Amino acid sequence: MNPKKLDDLRRDRKAAADTMQTAADAIGTLEAAGKGAQDAEHIAAVTAFEAAEAAFNQADAAVKRAEATERARAAAAVGDTAPGLGAESRPAMPTNPAEKGVALGFMVHALAAARGDRDKAASYLEREGHSGISAALSGATEAAGGVTVPRALAGELIELLRARVVVRQAGARTFPMPAGQIRHAKQTAAATASYAAENAAITASEPTFDKVDQSFKKLTGLVPIGNSLLRHSGLAMAQMVRDDLVKVMALREDLAFIRGDGTSNTPKGIRNWLLAGNWVAALNSGIAANATAAETALRRVVSRVEDANVALVNPGWIMRAGAKNFLASLKDANGNPLFPSIGANGQLLGAPIYTTSQIANNLGTAG
Image 1: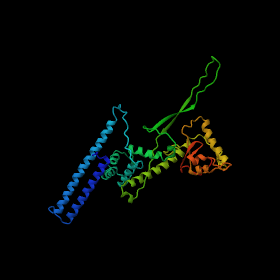
Image 2: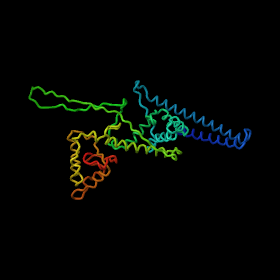
Image 3: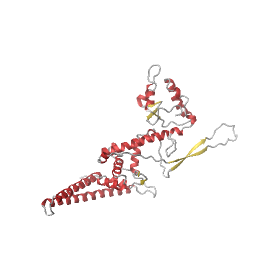
Image 4: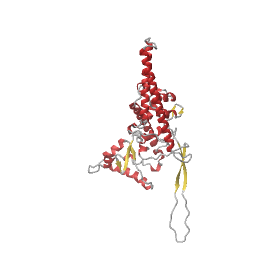
């Protein structure tokens, strides 16, 4: 017979605990009715409780053995890596992709039920049979006003955000910032090349560089959970909490990554990194006049990028859904779609379109 998986063992332990509770309630009912310790019913109830307790102890020991084995296997998987370079542990991936990140939902629910008390929330998860999530929460750090999501669960949340935030979808690169800040080098002037007569001195030149310092920004989320929902702890509840949290955080990330001004602890967005000379504002007043004006404006934008010798390795368009649908509705002189690729494969001039409601529709020529 195949050995049970850890989740199955946890469910067995939860069932044994429920049986213990039922037996204890039966004893209490009998004693309230005046049944003494020598009464046959009382003896049977005590025997049932002791059997349930033994089953729970056995199941609890099995869970702890399985958890200890998992920890040992994880430690052994690091191998002979040099000190300080140990392989980073990765959270287990759910078999069903739809269940990715539900551990975060269970954790948020438990914290809400415990009114923010981390220890009580961990105990609640343990009683419900989620000892793995309880262990993760026990290792989390408390900050003013909340609990920091453990690293493994944060990784799952970021994976979910990657599919919802258009800037992440478009291929924005992410990199670690362990010290809370990072410095990039930028080239401010290039070297030069020129033709010269044979044996003539070569004109010296060298590129010049400057620095761009960046510091981390912390995104927080608040999910209201009603009292009726707190009375349930099933998978559907965890998925709802997870989805709500991902939704609000994705919308806020979109707004910051696209239009953030870099003040008040927010990131600096794409619009505010854009140099003034690259902002095509003069065409905005006539862009909706006709199909020709719209196409001219779009091709002007592409030309600006190509003329700056920027490699279009992973290009993309970010716009409101209304702007995409407007462009899809444009027709040429013969009544054919001006940009048929929008309807065919969601691309415009060879680059994919990403839509978001976080770009306002009343920005005007100043953007």
